[in-house]
Length: 197
Image (cartoon, rainbow, N blue to C red; front, side, top):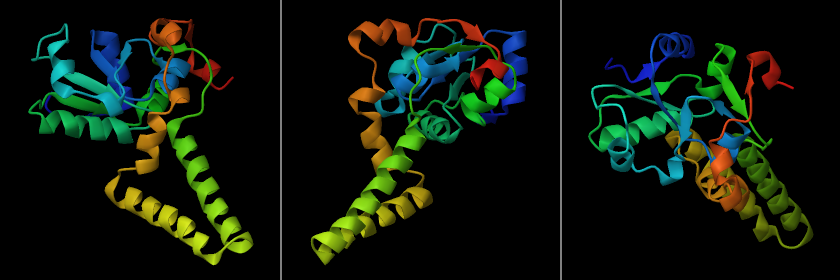
């Protein structure tokens, strides 16, 4: 398969027919909360395509599948692999959310806030802070809101988010030494219906 994307439904069928090699490029905390049972965590902010390919147990003739929450980070990770010279890498469209809806088995751990929600919270807070400071302290603080707004426009155009990259490195988005093994240890498989609970 040379296509760079696969739908969640096609991926679910593929998983039923044979073993697949899947990496999840979300933060360790997002991965710990819920992930596909067959995935291993390789956060995009620490992704080294060559190292990943060297540690694969399946041969290079078999595709490497990449997944994130909804598809955006997975697409970026695929681009990183392609730039490094690895063409047989496929993004799972719709990410983990779509795969859960397609009926794939999941592993659930401790609840966390997704990186996308954290970005929205941080950006909104900075805009409000800039406006509040401009009103109460000095009008020049309005440039904090302008800066954040411009950053969001840039993120939308380039699909690169500086706030997201910073937040991905924050301690609450990492697993502690004690939790590291539990980030990839199964804590019980759930059906898609149980995910919303």
